[in-house]
Image 1: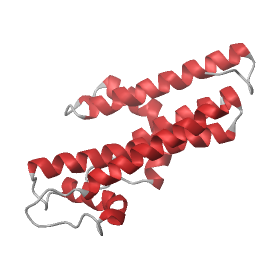
Image 2 (image 1 turned 180 degrees about the vertical axis):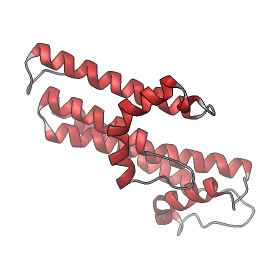
Image 3 (image 1 turned 30 degrees about the vertical axis):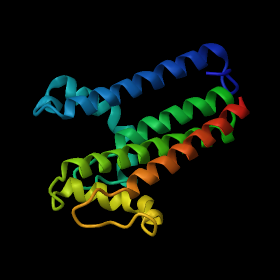
Image 4 (image 1 turned 180 degrees about the horizontal axis):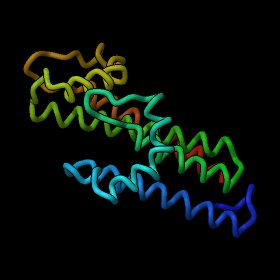
Length: 179
C-alpha cells in the first residue's frame, strides 16, 4: 500500500490486518464449500458467522446464477478497494482497481467459454448456459467479422479476450500514472 491517508499508522495497520483476515476467511469459506458437510462443522459455522455480514449484502445485489455464486469474489474485490481508499484516499485509483478486477473476472469468464468450446460440453447444462449467456454481451460485437458456424470453433470469444486484455493493460497503465 502507498501511505495511510485516512488513518494514523497503528490504526491503518490494524485495518489492513483485519481486512486481510476477512479476505482469507472468505477464501477458506469458498474452499470449504466444495467439501460436503464442512460448512455444518464448528469451523464452517464460525466462518459463516464471520463472513456472512460481508457476503450476504453482496448476494442480495448479485444473486447466484446457474449454480455460480460470485458474491464471495465481489466481496473480496470490495475489501481490496476499501483498503486502497483508506490507504491512499484516492477515489480515482480505487475506481481504476475496480475496473481492473471487473476486467479480470470477465476475462476469466471468456477463457472458461473458450475452454468449453474446445471440449464441446453439453449446451443444455445450466452452468454452460450461464457462462455462454453472460459472456455473449462481450462476444456480440465480433459476430459480424467472426460469425458462429455450427460444428466449428467460435472465434468471437478469443477476439473479445484480446480486446479486453488491451483494455486491461490500458487501465493498468492509467492506474500506474496515478501513483
